[in-house]
Amino acid sequence: MSNPSHIQHVEILCGIPASGKSTYAHLRVSRDGYVRVNKDGLRQTMLCTQFDAQKEGFIHALQKHTIEYLLDQGHNIVIDNTHVTRNSRREIHELVAVWRANKELLTGIAHPVHVTTAYFGVDVDECTRRNAWRTSPVPDEVISYMYARLEPPTPEEKAGACPEREN
Ligand SMILES: Nc1ncnc2c1ncn2[C@@H]1O[C@H](COP(=O)(O)OP(=O)(O)O)[C@@H](O)[C@H]1O
Ligand SMILES: [Mg+2]
Image (cartoon, rainbow, N blue to C red; front, side):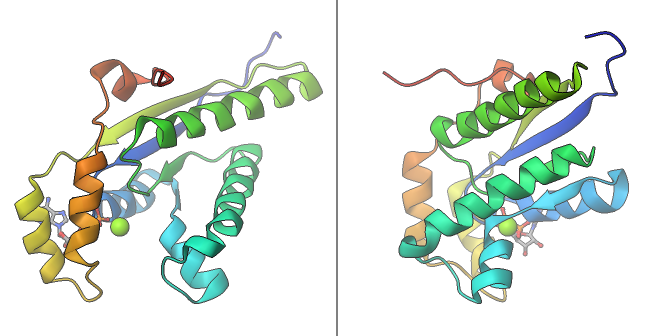
């Protein structure tokens, strides 16, 4: 495990719709050279649809393979979905942990990846207002539903810790 390669960064964005995630993700790409992964974008590109629960398995798998490929290629990644639940964020941590273990097994070299979470804790009424001005607003009920499920990250999680498993 000598000669470790450079650290790669994975940044998970967390926030209800219209909280500013995609605006920030675009900045990460243009300013810092990250690659953006976004399920809405994959849905639109691959299936020409918006959210469809029956097709989420496909989109989920596609996102997983995309993240693994980008890690293989040495990229830093910003993952621009709502990630309002701890479970959804822990899943990304676990995916990265498995990727690292496999990579180290294959190469004999450590591949450190720092997984952090950026939280967009914007007031729900402000998000509803911003959403109304967008070209393709999401239904207000989706914002309320996401807000009801929101589990904000702890300072430790923001800095890199994997969120605790729920009981
Ligand atoms: N910091 C901000 N202050 C005010 N408006 C913002 C800010 N960040 C984003 N917006 C606006 O809010 C709307 C939603 O932003 P977006 O980044 O698409 O949110 P999300 O990806 O979380 O749904 C857009 O119209 C955007 O221009
Ligand atoms: Mg967005």
